[in-house]
Amino acid sequence: MARGRQTTGPPDFIGVGTQRSGTTWWFGTLLQHPDIRPPRERRKELHFFNRFAWQEMRDADIARYHQRFPRRPGQLTGEWTPRYMHNFWTPRLIRRAAPEAKLLVMFRDPIERFRSGVPKERSVDAGRPVDAIVADAIERGRYASQLERLRAGHETAQILILQYENCVADPVGEFQRTLRFLGADPDHEPRDVERTRGRSQAPSKKPLWPDLVDALTASMEPEVRRLAAIAPEIDVSLWPNFSHLARANAPAA
Amino acid sequence: MPPPPEPVGPPDYVGVGAEGAGGAWWHRLLLAHPEIGAPPERSLDFFAEFCDRECESADIARYHRRFARAGATIAGEWTDRYMHDGWTPPLLRRAAPEAKLLVMLSDPIAGYRASFAERSARRAAGGRITMTDAADRRNYASQLARLRRWFDPERILVLQYERCRSDPLGQYRQTLRFLGVRDDFVPRRLSGAVRRAEALSVAALLRTPVAESVRRRALVRLTGRPDPTGAAPALWPDLETALRTTFEPELRALRELVPELEPALWPSFSGDGG
Image (cartoon, rainbow over all chains, first blue to last red; front, side):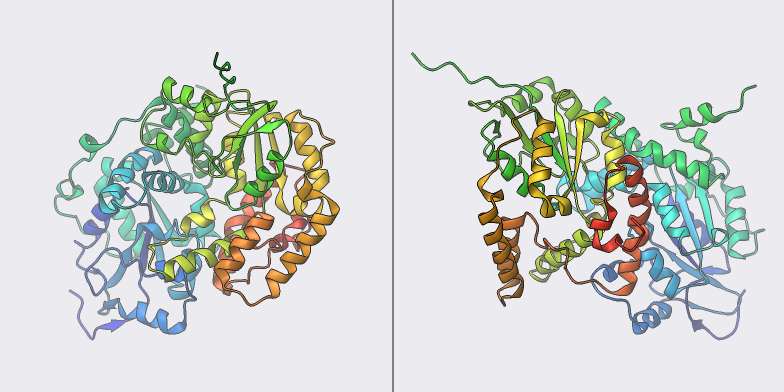
Protein backbone atom coordinates (compact mmCIF):
# COMPACT_ATOMS: atom_id res chain seq x y z
CA MET A 1 0.00 0.00 0.00
CA ALA A 2 1.44 3.39 -0.99
CA ARG A 3 2.14 5.72 1.90
CA GLY A 4 3.55 9.19 2.24
CA ARG A 5 2.49 12.66 1.31
CA GLN A 6 0.14 13.19 -1.59
CA THR A 7 1.44 15.30 -4.45
CA THR A 8 0.10 16.39 -7.81
CA GLY A 9 1.81 16.57 -11.16
CA PRO A 10 1.53 15.43 -14.74
CA PRO A 11 -0.29 12.13 -15.20
CA ASP A 12 1.82 9.00 -15.52
CA PHE A 13 -0.37 7.71 -18.31
CA ILE A 14 -3.02 8.98 -20.67
CA GLY A 15 -5.36 6.82 -22.69
CA VAL A 16 -5.90 8.65 -25.97
CA GLY A 17 -8.09 6.35 -28.06
CA THR A 18 -10.32 5.03 -29.35
CA GLN A 19 -14.02 5.61 -28.71
CA ARG A 20 -16.28 2.52 -28.30
CA SER A 21 -13.34 0.15 -28.13
CA GLY A 22 -13.52 -1.14 -24.58
CA THR A 23 -11.56 1.68 -22.97
CA THR A 24 -13.98 2.07 -20.04
CA TRP A 25 -13.63 -1.63 -19.30
CA TRP A 26 -9.86 -1.48 -19.52
CA PHE A 27 -9.52 1.69 -17.44
CA GLY A 28 -11.81 0.22 -14.79
CA THR A 29 -9.71 -2.92 -14.74
CA LEU A 30 -6.54 -0.86 -14.35
CA LEU A 31 -8.06 0.92 -11.38
CA GLN A 32 -8.40 -2.43 -9.60
CA HIS A 33 -4.63 -2.36 -9.24
CA PRO A 34 -3.70 -1.08 -5.77
CA ASP A 35 -1.02 1.25 -7.16
CA ILE A 36 -3.11 2.89 -9.90
CA ARG A 37 -5.53 5.67 -9.12
CA PRO A 38 -7.88 7.84 -11.14
CA PRO A 39 -7.89 11.63 -11.49
CA ARG A 40 -9.10 13.70 -8.56
CA GLU A 41 -12.71 13.68 -9.82
CA ARG A 42 -12.58 9.87 -10.18
CA ARG A 43 -13.65 10.31 -13.79
CA LYS A 44 -12.11 8.30 -16.58
CA GLU A 45 -12.46 11.04 -19.24
CA LEU A 46 -11.32 14.57 -18.43
CA HIS A 47 -11.64 15.98 -21.97
CA PHE A 48 -9.18 18.56 -20.75
CA PHE A 49 -7.66 19.45 -24.11
CA ASN A 50 -10.89 19.83 -26.08
CA ARG A 51 -11.17 23.54 -25.29
CA PHE A 52 -7.80 24.29 -26.84
CA ALA A 53 -9.29 24.03 -30.29
CA TRP A 54 -10.51 27.55 -29.54
CA GLN A 55 -7.77 29.11 -27.48
CA GLU A 56 -4.10 28.74 -26.80
CA MET A 57 -3.06 26.50 -23.92
CA ARG A 58 -1.10 28.54 -21.33
CA ASP A 59 1.24 27.40 -18.59
CA ALA A 60 -1.50 28.11 -16.06
CA ASP A 61 -3.74 25.64 -17.91
CA ILE A 62 -1.03 23.01 -17.68
CA ALA A 63 -0.70 23.65 -13.96
CA ARG A 64 -4.46 23.18 -13.61
CA TYR A 65 -4.22 19.90 -15.49
CA HIS A 66 -1.51 18.67 -13.15
CA GLN A 67 -3.67 19.49 -10.14
CA ARG A 68 -6.17 16.92 -11.37
CA PHE A 69 -3.73 14.09 -10.63
CA PRO A 70 -2.97 13.53 -6.97
CA ARG A 71 -0.92 10.49 -6.03
CA ARG A 72 1.23 9.17 -3.21
CA PRO A 73 4.75 7.86 -3.67
CA GLY A 74 4.71 4.62 -5.59
CA GLN A 75 1.30 5.26 -7.12
CA LEU A 76 0.53 5.84 -10.79
CA THR A 77 -2.30 8.01 -12.01
CA GLY A 78 -3.82 8.91 -15.32
CA GLU A 79 -6.94 9.39 -17.38
CA TRP A 80 -8.39 7.99 -20.60
CA THR A 81 -10.21 10.31 -23.02
CA PRO A 82 -10.74 8.40 -26.27
CA ARG A 83 -11.14 11.46 -28.46
CA TYR A 84 -7.69 12.87 -27.70
CA MET A 85 -6.24 10.86 -30.53
CA HIS A 86 -8.91 11.97 -32.98
CA ASN A 87 -8.61 15.67 -32.10
CA PHE A 88 -5.67 16.70 -34.26
CA TRP A 89 -4.54 19.50 -31.94
CA THR A 90 -4.29 17.33 -28.83
CA PRO A 91 -1.17 15.13 -29.25
CA ARG A 92 1.08 18.19 -29.32
CA LEU A 93 -0.57 19.60 -26.19
CA ILE A 94 -0.15 16.29 -24.36
CA ARG A 95 3.50 16.46 -25.23
CA ARG A 96 3.67 19.88 -23.54
CA ALA A 97 1.50 19.09 -20.54
CA ALA A 98 2.76 15.58 -19.79
CA PRO A 99 5.93 14.91 -21.76
CA GLU A 100 6.81 11.77 -19.81
CA ALA A 101 3.32 10.28 -19.77
CA LYS A 102 2.88 6.86 -21.28
CA LEU A 103 0.11 6.72 -23.82
CA LEU A 104 -2.43 3.94 -24.20
CA VAL A 105 -4.38 3.24 -27.36
CA MET A 106 -7.05 0.57 -27.70
CA PHE A 107 -8.04 -0.28 -31.27
CA ARG A 108 -11.05 -2.29 -32.34
CA ASP A 109 -12.30 -3.48 -35.73
CA PRO A 110 -13.13 -0.04 -37.13
CA ILE A 111 -16.42 -1.09 -38.69
CA GLU A 112 -17.56 -2.65 -35.42
CA ARG A 113 -16.42 0.55 -33.71
CA PHE A 114 -18.51 2.50 -36.21
CA ARG A 115 -21.56 0.32 -35.55
CA SER A 116 -21.23 0.91 -31.85
CA GLY A 117 -20.26 4.58 -32.04
CA VAL A 118 -23.12 5.87 -34.18
CA PRO A 119 -25.99 4.75 -31.93
CA LYS A 120 -24.06 5.85 -28.87
CA GLU A 121 -23.52 9.38 -30.24
CA ARG A 122 -27.14 9.59 -31.35
CA SER A 123 -28.27 8.71 -27.86
CA VAL A 124 -26.05 11.26 -26.12
CA ASP A 125 -26.44 14.09 -28.63
CA ALA A 126 -29.96 13.86 -30.00
CA GLY A 127 -29.84 17.35 -31.50
CA ARG A 128 -26.88 16.68 -33.73
CA PRO A 129 -27.65 15.81 -37.37
CA VAL A 130 -27.19 12.13 -38.04
CA ASP A 131 -25.09 12.76 -41.14
CA ALA A 132 -22.60 14.73 -39.02
CA ILE A 133 -22.48 11.84 -36.55
CA VAL A 134 -21.92 9.28 -39.29
CA ALA A 135 -19.24 11.37 -41.01
CA ASP A 136 -17.45 11.79 -37.69
CA ALA A 137 -17.71 8.07 -36.97
CA ILE A 138 -16.05 7.29 -40.29
CA GLU A 139 -13.23 9.74 -39.56
CA ARG A 140 -12.66 8.15 -36.17
CA GLY A 141 -11.78 4.95 -38.00
CA ARG A 142 -8.70 6.54 -39.56
CA TYR A 143 -6.48 4.71 -37.12
CA ALA A 144 -3.19 4.80 -39.02
CA SER A 145 -3.38 8.54 -39.66
CA GLN A 146 -4.12 9.15 -36.00
CA LEU A 147 -1.30 6.91 -34.83
CA GLU A 148 1.16 8.54 -37.21
CA ARG A 149 0.15 11.95 -35.91
CA LEU A 150 0.65 10.73 -32.35
CA ARG A 151 4.05 9.32 -33.20
CA ALA A 152 5.10 12.61 -34.77
CA GLY A 153 5.54 13.96 -31.24
CA HIS A 154 5.99 10.84 -29.13
CA GLU A 155 8.47 7.99 -29.19
CA THR A 156 7.00 4.72 -30.39
CA ALA A 157 8.15 3.12 -27.11
CA GLN A 158 6.04 5.63 -25.18
CA ILE A 159 2.83 4.32 -26.74
CA LEU A 160 1.19 1.00 -25.91
CA ILE A 161 -1.08 -0.33 -28.62
CA LEU A 162 -3.78 -2.63 -27.39
CA GLN A 163 -6.32 -4.48 -29.46
CA TYR A 164 -9.78 -4.89 -28.00
CA GLU A 165 -10.24 -8.33 -29.51
CA ASN A 166 -6.95 -9.45 -27.98
CA CYS A 167 -7.95 -8.10 -24.61
CA VAL A 168 -11.22 -10.03 -24.81
CA ALA A 169 -9.43 -13.23 -25.80
CA ASP A 170 -6.66 -12.97 -23.21
CA PRO A 171 -7.63 -10.37 -20.63
CA VAL A 172 -5.15 -11.42 -17.96
CA GLY A 173 -2.21 -11.61 -20.36
CA GLU A 174 -3.01 -8.24 -21.92
CA PHE A 175 -3.66 -6.72 -18.50
CA GLN A 176 -0.23 -7.83 -17.32
CA ARG A 177 1.30 -6.44 -20.50
CA THR A 178 -0.37 -3.11 -19.78
CA LEU A 179 0.89 -3.12 -16.19
CA ARG A 180 4.43 -3.86 -17.30
CA PHE A 181 4.26 -1.00 -19.78
CA LEU A 182 3.03 1.38 -17.08
CA GLY A 183 5.69 0.22 -14.61
CA ALA A 184 3.20 -1.27 -12.14
CA ASP A 185 3.53 -4.63 -10.43
CA PRO A 186 2.35 -7.04 -13.16
CA ASP A 187 1.53 -9.87 -10.76
CA HIS A 188 -1.75 -8.31 -9.70
CA GLU A 189 -4.69 -10.37 -10.94
CA PRO A 190 -7.85 -8.42 -11.76
CA ARG A 191 -11.10 -9.62 -10.23
CA ASP A 192 -13.68 -11.05 -12.55
CA VAL A 193 -12.38 -9.19 -15.57
CA GLU A 194 -15.01 -10.74 -17.82
CA ARG A 195 -17.91 -9.40 -15.78
CA THR A 196 -16.66 -5.83 -15.78
CA ARG A 197 -16.51 -5.70 -19.57
CA GLY A 198 -20.18 -4.81 -19.67
CA ARG A 199 -22.97 -6.09 -21.83
CA SER A 200 -22.63 -6.58 -25.53
CA GLN A 201 -24.25 -3.78 -27.53
CA ALA A 202 -24.86 -6.15 -30.43
CA PRO A 203 -28.67 -6.31 -30.06
CA SER A 204 -28.98 -2.51 -30.41
CA LYS A 205 -26.73 -2.28 -33.42
CA LYS A 206 -28.41 -1.57 -36.71
CA PRO A 207 -27.57 -3.93 -39.57
CA LEU A 208 -25.58 -2.22 -42.29
CA TRP A 209 -26.65 -2.30 -45.91
CA PRO A 210 -24.31 -3.24 -48.80
CA ASP A 211 -23.59 0.28 -50.07
CA LEU A 212 -22.64 1.44 -46.60
CA VAL A 213 -20.47 -1.61 -45.99
CA ASP A 214 -18.69 -0.94 -49.29
CA ALA A 215 -18.21 2.71 -48.37
CA LEU A 216 -16.91 1.94 -44.90
CA THR A 217 -14.58 -0.70 -46.22
CA ALA A 218 -13.23 1.66 -48.87
CA SER A 219 -12.66 4.36 -46.28
CA MET A 220 -11.06 2.17 -43.68
CA GLU A 221 -9.19 -0.52 -45.59
CA PRO A 222 -6.25 1.71 -46.59
CA GLU A 223 -5.98 2.80 -42.97
CA VAL A 224 -6.08 -0.79 -41.68
CA ARG A 225 -3.39 -1.81 -44.17
CA ARG A 226 -1.16 1.04 -43.02
CA LEU A 227 -1.88 0.36 -39.38
CA ALA A 228 -0.85 -3.26 -39.79
CA ALA A 229 2.40 -2.05 -41.37
CA ILE A 230 3.29 0.51 -38.70
CA ALA A 231 1.96 -1.43 -35.71
CA PRO A 232 2.83 -5.11 -36.21
CA GLU A 233 1.26 -5.96 -32.86
CA ILE A 234 -2.15 -5.47 -34.47
CA ASP A 235 -3.54 -8.82 -35.59
CA VAL A 236 -5.85 -7.98 -38.48
CA SER A 237 -7.16 -11.54 -38.56
CA LEU A 238 -9.03 -10.70 -35.34
CA TRP A 239 -11.06 -8.03 -37.11
CA PRO A 240 -13.95 -9.79 -38.84
CA ASN A 241 -14.44 -7.02 -41.39
CA PHE A 242 -10.79 -6.95 -42.41
CA SER A 243 -9.53 -10.48 -41.82
CA HIS A 244 -9.24 -10.90 -45.59
CA LEU A 245 -6.24 -8.55 -45.41
CA ALA A 246 -4.47 -10.95 -43.06
CA ARG A 247 -5.16 -13.84 -45.40
CA ALA A 248 -3.85 -11.83 -48.34
CA ASN A 249 -0.61 -11.13 -46.45
CA ALA A 250 -0.14 -14.64 -45.08
CA PRO A 251 3.00 -16.39 -46.38
CA ALA A 252 2.35 -19.27 -48.73
CA ALA A 253 2.47 -22.67 -47.01
CA MET B 1 -51.92 20.08 -76.06
CA PRO B 2 -49.37 20.32 -73.22
CA PRO B 3 -45.71 20.50 -74.18
CA PRO B 4 -43.84 17.21 -73.93
CA PRO B 5 -41.99 16.74 -70.64
CA GLU B 6 -38.40 17.83 -70.63
CA PRO B 7 -35.97 14.93 -70.76
CA VAL B 8 -34.55 13.95 -67.37
CA GLY B 9 -31.85 11.55 -66.36
CA PRO B 10 -28.66 11.21 -64.41
CA PRO B 11 -26.55 14.33 -64.15
CA ASP B 12 -23.77 14.76 -66.69
CA TYR B 13 -21.52 16.27 -64.07
CA VAL B 14 -21.39 16.51 -60.30
CA GLY B 15 -19.20 18.83 -58.28
CA VAL B 16 -18.27 16.82 -55.21
CA GLY B 17 -15.91 18.97 -53.19
CA ALA B 18 -14.17 20.20 -51.33
CA GLU B 19 -16.02 22.11 -48.67
CA GLY B 20 -15.28 25.80 -48.43
CA ALA B 21 -12.90 25.67 -51.38
CA GLY B 22 -14.78 27.92 -53.79
CA GLY B 23 -16.83 25.33 -55.65
CA ALA B 24 -20.06 27.34 -55.42
CA TRP B 25 -18.38 30.32 -57.09
CA TRP B 26 -17.03 28.13 -59.85
CA HIS B 27 -20.38 26.46 -60.37
CA ARG B 28 -22.10 29.84 -60.73
CA LEU B 29 -19.61 30.68 -63.47
CA LEU B 30 -20.30 27.35 -65.18
CA LEU B 31 -24.04 27.95 -65.05
CA ALA B 32 -23.57 31.16 -67.03
CA HIS B 33 -22.67 28.91 -69.97
CA PRO B 34 -25.63 28.47 -72.34
CA GLU B 35 -25.11 24.71 -72.64
CA ILE B 36 -25.01 23.99 -68.91
CA GLY B 37 -28.04 23.70 -66.65
CA ALA B 38 -28.72 22.76 -63.05
CA PRO B 39 -31.54 22.54 -60.51
CA PRO B 40 -32.35 25.88 -58.91
CA GLU B 41 -30.95 25.00 -55.46
CA ARG B 42 -27.46 26.15 -54.62
CA SER B 43 -26.62 22.53 -53.77
CA LEU B 44 -28.86 19.48 -53.74
CA ASP B 45 -27.26 17.65 -50.82
CA PHE B 46 -29.20 14.69 -52.13
CA PHE B 47 -27.25 11.81 -50.60
CA ALA B 48 -26.98 13.01 -46.99
CA GLU B 49 -29.99 11.01 -45.81
CA PHE B 50 -28.51 7.74 -47.05
CA CYS B 51 -26.07 7.65 -44.19
CA ASP B 52 -29.04 6.39 -42.22
CA ARG B 53 -30.97 4.25 -44.66
CA GLU B 54 -30.43 2.38 -47.89
CA CYS B 55 -30.71 4.29 -51.16
CA GLU B 56 -33.44 2.57 -53.19
CA SER B 57 -34.03 2.61 -56.93
CA ALA B 58 -36.94 4.99 -56.37
CA ASP B 59 -34.55 7.41 -54.69
CA ILE B 60 -32.24 7.28 -57.66
CA ALA B 61 -35.16 7.93 -60.00
CA ARG B 62 -36.06 10.90 -57.82
CA TYR B 63 -32.49 12.15 -58.17
CA HIS B 64 -32.65 11.82 -61.95
CA ARG B 65 -35.83 13.86 -62.07
CA ARG B 66 -33.90 16.82 -60.70
CA PHE B 67 -31.96 17.08 -63.93
CA ALA B 68 -34.27 18.35 -66.64
CA ARG B 69 -32.20 19.51 -69.58
CA ALA B 70 -34.51 22.46 -70.33
CA GLY B 71 -32.72 23.39 -73.50
CA ALA B 72 -29.30 23.06 -71.94
CA THR B 73 -27.06 20.43 -73.43
CA ILE B 74 -25.83 19.09 -70.13
CA ALA B 75 -27.06 19.27 -66.53
CA GLY B 76 -25.45 18.72 -63.19
CA GLU B 77 -25.07 19.92 -59.64
CA TRP B 78 -22.39 20.82 -57.12
CA THR B 79 -22.63 19.71 -53.50
CA ASP B 80 -19.25 20.20 -51.97
CA ARG B 81 -19.68 17.76 -49.09
CA TYR B 82 -20.14 14.68 -51.30
CA MET B 83 -16.42 13.98 -51.35
CA HIS B 84 -16.09 14.12 -47.59
CA ASP B 85 -19.22 12.11 -46.80
CA GLY B 86 -17.77 8.63 -46.90
CA TRP B 87 -21.04 6.91 -47.80
CA THR B 88 -21.67 9.02 -50.90
CA PRO B 89 -19.18 7.87 -53.59
CA PRO B 90 -20.71 4.40 -54.09
CA LEU B 91 -24.18 5.95 -54.25
CA LEU B 92 -23.03 8.47 -56.80
CA ARG B 93 -21.60 5.64 -58.81
CA ARG B 94 -24.98 3.90 -58.74
CA ALA B 95 -26.98 7.03 -59.46
CA ALA B 96 -24.73 8.62 -62.08
CA PRO B 97 -22.14 6.15 -63.31
CA GLU B 98 -21.31 8.21 -66.40
CA ALA B 99 -21.12 11.57 -64.64
CA LYS B 100 -17.97 13.61 -64.78
CA LEU B 101 -16.86 14.77 -61.37
CA LEU B 102 -15.46 18.17 -60.49
CA VAL B 103 -13.31 18.78 -57.45
CA MET B 104 -12.08 22.20 -56.31
CA LEU B 105 -9.32 22.22 -53.71
CA SER B 106 -7.75 25.10 -51.84
CA ASP B 107 -5.02 25.62 -49.25
CA PRO B 108 -6.26 23.43 -46.38
CA ILE B 109 -4.67 25.46 -43.63
CA ALA B 110 -5.99 28.76 -44.97
CA GLY B 111 -9.38 27.06 -45.26
CA TYR B 112 -9.19 25.83 -41.68
CA ARG B 113 -8.39 29.34 -40.47
CA ALA B 114 -11.35 30.75 -42.38
CA SER B 115 -13.55 28.05 -40.93
CA PHE B 116 -12.22 28.85 -37.47
CA ALA B 117 -13.20 32.50 -37.86
CA GLU B 118 -16.66 31.61 -39.06
CA ARG B 119 -17.30 28.99 -36.39
CA SER B 120 -15.89 31.20 -33.63
CA ALA B 121 -18.56 33.74 -34.45
CA ARG B 122 -21.28 31.08 -34.30
CA ARG B 123 -19.84 29.73 -31.05
CA ALA B 124 -19.83 33.21 -29.54
CA ALA B 125 -23.51 33.41 -30.42
CA GLY B 126 -24.13 30.32 -28.31
CA GLY B 127 -23.83 27.53 -30.86
CA ARG B 128 -22.47 24.14 -29.84
CA ILE B 129 -19.64 24.00 -32.33
CA THR B 130 -16.68 21.67 -32.78
CA MET B 131 -13.56 22.06 -34.92
CA THR B 132 -12.47 18.46 -35.49
CA ASP B 133 -14.40 18.09 -38.71
CA ALA B 134 -13.01 21.37 -40.06
CA ALA B 135 -9.73 19.49 -40.41
CA ASP B 136 -11.31 16.18 -41.43
CA ARG B 137 -13.04 17.86 -44.36
CA ARG B 138 -9.70 18.94 -45.78
CA ASN B 139 -8.07 15.50 -45.91
CA TYR B 140 -8.11 15.80 -49.68
CA ALA B 141 -5.88 12.89 -50.63
CA SER B 142 -7.81 10.34 -48.59
CA GLN B 143 -11.08 11.60 -50.02
CA LEU B 144 -9.81 11.64 -53.57
CA ALA B 145 -8.34 8.15 -53.25
CA ARG B 146 -11.71 6.92 -51.98
CA LEU B 147 -13.52 8.60 -54.84
CA ARG B 148 -11.24 6.85 -57.31
CA ARG B 149 -12.39 3.47 -56.02
CA TRP B 150 -15.63 4.17 -57.87
CA PHE B 151 -14.66 6.59 -60.61
CA ASP B 152 -11.73 6.43 -63.02
CA PRO B 153 -9.27 9.29 -62.59
CA GLU B 154 -10.11 10.37 -66.15
CA ARG B 155 -13.65 11.12 -65.00
CA ILE B 156 -12.47 13.46 -62.23
CA LEU B 157 -11.22 16.98 -62.88
CA VAL B 158 -9.25 18.37 -59.96
CA LEU B 159 -9.12 22.16 -59.91
CA GLN B 160 -7.16 24.40 -57.61
CA TYR B 161 -8.98 27.44 -56.31
CA GLU B 162 -5.88 29.61 -56.27
CA ARG B 163 -5.18 28.78 -59.91
CA CYS B 164 -8.79 29.50 -60.81
CA ARG B 165 -8.41 32.92 -59.19
CA SER B 166 -5.16 33.75 -60.94
CA ASP B 167 -6.06 32.30 -64.34
CA PRO B 168 -9.85 32.11 -64.38
CA LEU B 169 -10.29 32.06 -68.12
CA GLY B 170 -7.72 29.32 -68.70
CA GLN B 171 -9.15 27.17 -65.94
CA TYR B 172 -12.70 27.89 -67.06
CA ARG B 173 -11.94 26.73 -70.57
CA GLN B 174 -10.25 23.62 -69.25
CA THR B 175 -13.37 22.87 -67.23
CA LEU B 176 -15.62 23.40 -70.26
CA ARG B 177 -13.49 21.07 -72.38
CA PHE B 178 -13.62 18.45 -69.65
CA LEU B 179 -17.40 18.73 -69.59
CA GLY B 180 -17.58 18.50 -73.37
CA VAL B 181 -19.24 21.84 -74.12
CA ARG B 182 -18.16 24.82 -76.23
CA ASP B 183 -15.02 26.30 -74.72
CA ASP B 184 -15.09 29.72 -76.41
CA PHE B 185 -17.75 31.14 -74.12
CA VAL B 186 -16.67 33.83 -71.65
CA PRO B 187 -19.11 34.60 -68.84
CA ARG B 188 -19.65 38.26 -68.17
CA ARG B 189 -18.14 37.92 -64.70
CA LEU B 190 -14.88 36.77 -66.25
CA SER B 191 -14.67 39.65 -68.72
CA GLY B 192 -11.77 42.01 -68.15
CA ALA B 193 -13.85 44.96 -67.01
CA VAL B 194 -15.90 42.97 -64.53
CA ARG B 195 -12.82 41.25 -63.15
CA ARG B 196 -11.10 44.59 -62.64
CA ALA B 197 -14.16 45.94 -60.86
CA GLU B 198 -14.36 42.79 -58.75
CA ALA B 199 -10.69 43.10 -57.76
CA LEU B 200 -11.33 46.66 -56.63
CA SER B 201 -14.38 45.56 -54.62
CA VAL B 202 -12.41 42.78 -52.94
CA ALA B 203 -9.57 45.15 -52.05
CA ALA B 204 -12.06 47.67 -50.66
CA LEU B 205 -13.82 44.98 -48.63
CA LEU B 206 -10.52 43.82 -47.16
CA ARG B 207 -9.56 47.29 -45.94
CA THR B 208 -12.94 48.81 -45.04
CA PRO B 209 -13.99 48.50 -41.39
CA VAL B 210 -17.32 46.70 -41.79
CA ALA B 211 -18.87 44.00 -39.64
CA GLU B 212 -16.97 40.74 -40.15
CA SER B 213 -20.14 38.86 -41.08
CA VAL B 214 -20.96 41.45 -43.75
CA ARG B 215 -17.43 41.28 -45.14
CA ARG B 216 -17.50 37.48 -45.25
CA ARG B 217 -20.84 37.32 -47.04
CA ALA B 218 -19.73 39.89 -49.61
CA LEU B 219 -16.44 38.12 -50.25
CA VAL B 220 -18.12 34.75 -50.65
CA ARG B 221 -20.57 36.26 -53.12
CA LEU B 222 -17.76 37.79 -55.13
CA THR B 223 -15.07 35.14 -54.96
CA GLY B 224 -16.58 31.97 -53.55
CA ARG B 225 -14.53 32.17 -50.36
CA PRO B 226 -14.45 34.39 -47.29
CA ASP B 227 -10.67 34.68 -47.62
CA PRO B 228 -9.93 34.84 -51.35
CA THR B 229 -6.32 35.77 -50.69
CA GLY B 230 -5.83 33.01 -48.11
CA ALA B 231 -4.99 35.79 -45.71
CA ALA B 232 -7.00 34.80 -42.64
CA PRO B 233 -4.66 35.40 -39.72
CA ALA B 234 -2.53 32.54 -38.46
CA LEU B 235 -3.71 30.89 -35.27
CA TRP B 236 -1.46 30.22 -32.25
CA PRO B 237 1.78 28.24 -32.69
CA ASP B 238 0.63 24.91 -31.21
CA LEU B 239 -2.39 24.84 -33.47
CA GLU B 240 -0.51 25.91 -36.58
CA THR B 241 2.06 23.17 -35.98
CA ALA B 242 -0.68 20.62 -35.39
CA LEU B 243 -2.35 21.63 -38.65
CA ARG B 244 0.87 21.11 -40.56
CA THR B 245 1.44 17.74 -38.88
CA THR B 246 -2.04 16.72 -39.93
CA PHE B 247 -2.04 18.00 -43.48
CA GLU B 248 1.53 17.36 -44.63
CA PRO B 249 1.06 13.59 -45.13
CA GLU B 250 -2.18 14.31 -46.98
CA LEU B 251 -0.43 16.84 -49.19
CA ARG B 252 2.36 14.39 -50.02
CA ALA B 253 -0.22 11.79 -51.02
CA LEU B 254 -2.19 14.38 -52.96
CA ARG B 255 0.84 15.32 -55.04
CA GLU B 256 1.19 11.68 -56.05
CA LEU B 257 -2.47 11.43 -56.97
CA VAL B 258 -2.56 14.79 -58.79
CA PRO B 259 0.91 15.58 -60.15
CA GLU B 260 -0.35 18.77 -61.81
CA LEU B 261 -1.22 20.23 -58.42
CA GLU B 262 0.86 23.29 -57.55
CA PRO B 263 1.51 23.34 -53.79
CA ALA B 264 3.42 26.59 -54.30
CA LEU B 265 0.04 28.24 -54.82
CA TRP B 266 -0.93 27.31 -51.28
CA PRO B 267 0.62 29.94 -49.02
CA SER B 268 0.70 27.62 -46.01
CA PHE B 269 2.88 25.13 -47.86
CA SER B 270 4.69 27.37 -50.33
CA GLY B 271 7.98 26.99 -48.43
CA ASP B 272 7.94 23.22 -48.88
CA GLY B 273 9.83 23.12 -52.14
CA GLY B 274 6.84 22.79 -54.47
